Image (tube, helix red, strand yellow):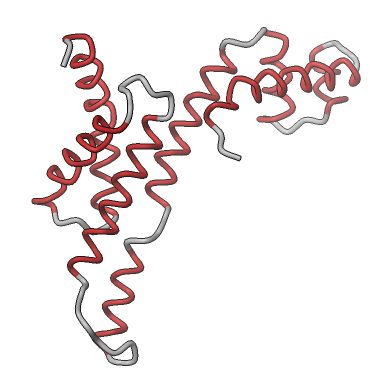
Length: 175
């Protein structure tokens, strides 16, 4: 690896190893094997994607999630009756690994950080209407009154701010 790529990869590893450990624990990977799964996740990522990929967080989560599911499938490969006590226990245990909560929270947080960044880079007038209309839930007329502009001007700024944000976020959102 070139030194710059190696440095970028190391930085990416440091940034994502903790959330990936949380996801692996959530999926029931034994503590002793979590780091191995994470190493394999990064190896798979590095073999298939560039280090500076904009969606690296989502890609890493998807790779790890699939590895965890494969791991759980391997350890649960035995024939049991669904109606038996062992079968119900095995299904309940397996289903705990398929919840999306932790992985989705990490992906949502990644997107949240991008939204915050893009909003902070917007024109100040747009930031104000986003604050009052989207976060504080004021109507356009109420926000306009607070900001000293008409409700129509407030709606216009909000529309432009939303269009700008949509354009900036389009590479990160799937159809």
